[in-house]
Amino acid sequence: MIAASDLRAGMTFLNGDKLIKVIDASHHKPGKGNTIMRMKLYDVRSGATYDDTYRPDEKFEKAHLETKPVQYLYTMDGMAFFMDLDTYDQYEIPVETVEHEMKFLLENMECKIQFFGTEVIGVSLPTTVVLKVVETQPSIKGATVTGSGKPAVLETGLTVNVPDFIEEGEYLEINTDNGTYQKRATK
Image 1: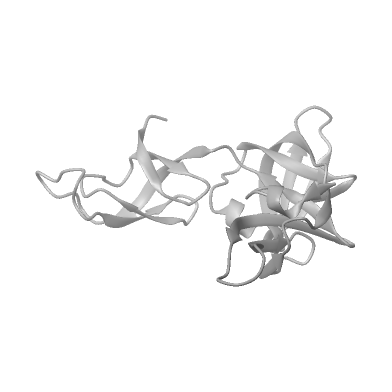
Image 2: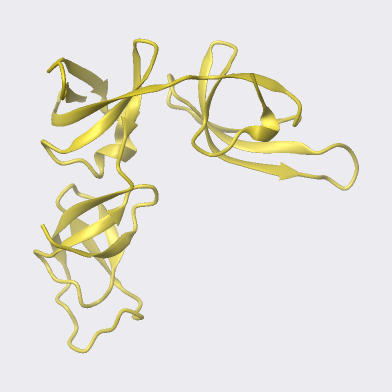
């Protein structure tokens, strides 16, 4: 069991029959009354995101998740297909369940699948991925890192704000948590 005050972003717990992932958690002390925990939560099974409050001493069962290394194969008919790197078993995950993660995945890319028991609940990405710029405005001569930047479309369809000196065809390191440009990369 885990107390609500110990829940942090990224943790997963059971609330009744719901499997809940914490997106954000913060202590809140109103002018009068007791401290409460304000949380932004994600229902893993339904895909719903919602806000809720709990008393800091409320207890929940921590969900024990397992991960397996897999390779992303392809997407077809609203399903994303992954292959276990050890057993070659294939897993299907509805695209709407992993919509955020799909913005960073290319075919044959390695990642991890998260399991709760035998139930596939999501995809765990590396902290950063390297993606190619397929569309952006021409670079500006003499541009510096401190400029306001410009939008760039990457090979997965993700649009990120990049410095003015970035050109089409370059490879960039992208943070998978927030989808931001980190630095130039070599392929």
